[in-house]
Length: 165
Image (cartoon, rainbow, N blue to C red; front, side, top):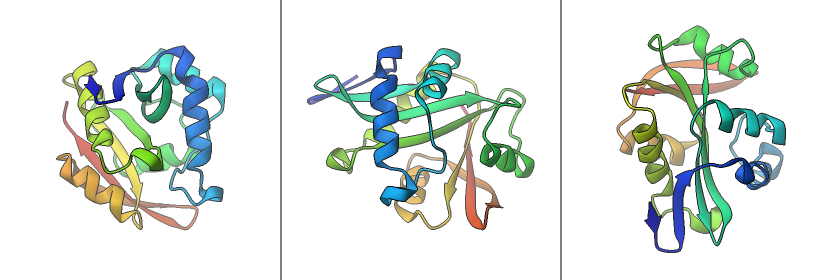
C-alpha cells in the first residue's frame, strides 16, 4: 500500500534494525509510551513468526506494528495481560505499534492495522495500552477496537482491547 512517500508493507528481515531504532526513540526513558524493550534478535524472531507491518519513507522505517503468538516466551507484561483476558483460542497479541513523531497524524497506525488484519484474517487480536495514553486509546477506539478489560503491571494501569479478524 502506497501513501504518498510512505509505503505500508509486510516487514522484512532487513527492516529489523530500523524497527529497533524507532522503538528505542520511543522508549519510556526518552519520553515515549512503549512498554517493552526490543533487541534486534527479538524483532527478527517476531518478523519470522507472524506478519509484522512496517511503514517506510525512502526505505527507512517510520512506523511499525508487531504481532506475536501466545507463548511461554512472551514478555512478563504480555503474560499479565493474558491473565486478565486470554482471548480466543487462536488470538495473537497485537503490538506494539509505533509511528515516528515526524509522520504522526496521517493515519499510519490505522493503515498498518488494516494490513495486519488482511494478512491474519479470521484471527482475534488482543492488545494493551497504558491507561494514561489518551492519544493511543482514542486512535484504537477509532479503529473499531473494543475495551475488554484492565490490568496493572509494575504499578502502571493498562486497558486491554480486542478485535476480531
